[in-house]
Image 1 (cartoon, rainbow, N blue to C red):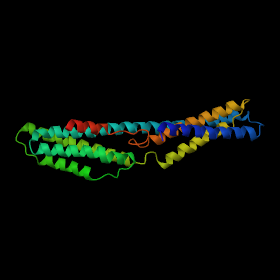
Image 2 (cartoon, rainbow, N blue to C red; image 1 turned 90 degrees about the vertical axis):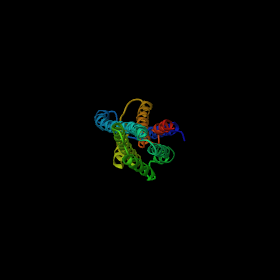
Image 3 (cartoon, one colour; image 1 turned 30 degrees about the vertical axis):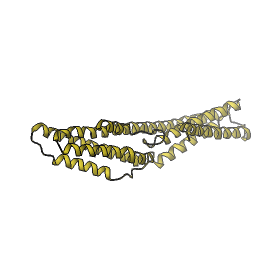
Image 4 (cartoon, rainbow, N blue to C red; image 1 turned 45 degrees about the horizontal axis):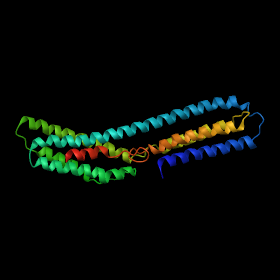
Length: 254
């Protein structure tokens, strides 16, 4: 199902449920004192709604930052891989050819095997990626050098491989994380319910306007919760980062 259709169903479903609840309250609830409740209920709603808005904004901003960090990390890892190979070219054969084959194998493995696994919100990938990094590190470390500039390039290749190692670890940690914790989800959902429940006791001369206001509020909160749910995994859902960085690395290594 399309993400846009799914989001629309979330919004419409919440709006309909809240609208029906508002209609039931206005239709079957006691009318005495309902208008007088507006001031007291409004003050409580300001506090509850304000706190809930702050929590929602904090969670969404954190998730947006996580998606951006995951994208930057992928490019840092891919660029480090290419940089390590370029630096190793000065070390001559057979180091150059072996580094090329290992770098191509690593980038291809990330695109074809690891990325689909991460899209399923899992970090259970093969250890072959780590093994290839270790073989590249050992290859560079054991490469003989005869000139000072070769030694500099050897140190550069080692530094780039360490960058790849760090970025890979961060990528797998992000893919294996649970995103928004259960406690935070409880607070988000409970806060949304409370934020919708308070306007139900508001009163006014026009029933349709009241129902419309409550429905819009519920739909808006549902939209924000849907966005939160979609952004939990930077590699899947609505974020759905693609392995463009590694595809570009493969193109540069060919």
